[in-house]
Length: 94
Image (cartoon, rainbow, N blue to C red; front, side, top):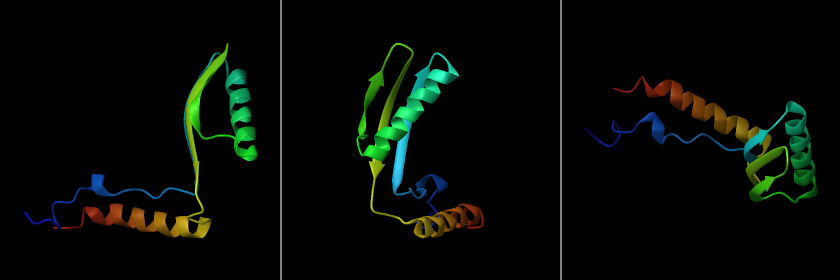
């Protein structure tokens, strides 16, 4: 088996947009969760969110927020199309 044929679709890495939030949140009620999400949105808009843990009486979450200069929206769409095409074509290889 050569290196070209030894690749698996697990080697394909999906593109990532310029702003990314990874969040694991728990709350006692939908309203509490919505309030926590609104708070996170406000922190992002103020440039105050990075990586951490937050918790209170009725909700808690772990988060990681990153913001990069790119890709732009159009660049992301092109990267994502190429990624999807690779996934579709993966099964066509001998």
